[in-house]
Length: 130
Image (cartoon, rainbow, N blue to C red; front, top):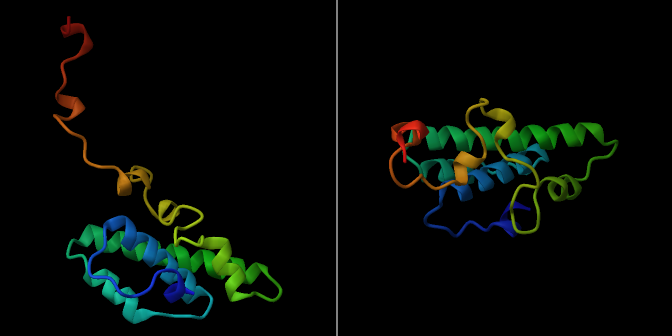
């Protein structure tokens, strides 16, 4: 499932791609198709502890969701669980990390580019602007 959707021929990943792959690897693990070498490879692509922890959270979230869906079904089908959680393009059908992150950190911070210019806290208050 994972190999068919993503493939393993990659040299670099963005943070978003790594989070999506980790989620899918977690789903695959949850349905009995574990790929620890690929997860290690995705983690090794990032030196930053923050990025690595997001990837691990995404993996845990995918695995947890897959195990929950499999537990609800009488006769869980690995393909059905995969299709319910990961679309054909490899994107998670739900948020890959939001349930695992604290309230101040959201899924949007993973994909949003840094703001240009000074932080809003350095802007003049409205009463001082003309």
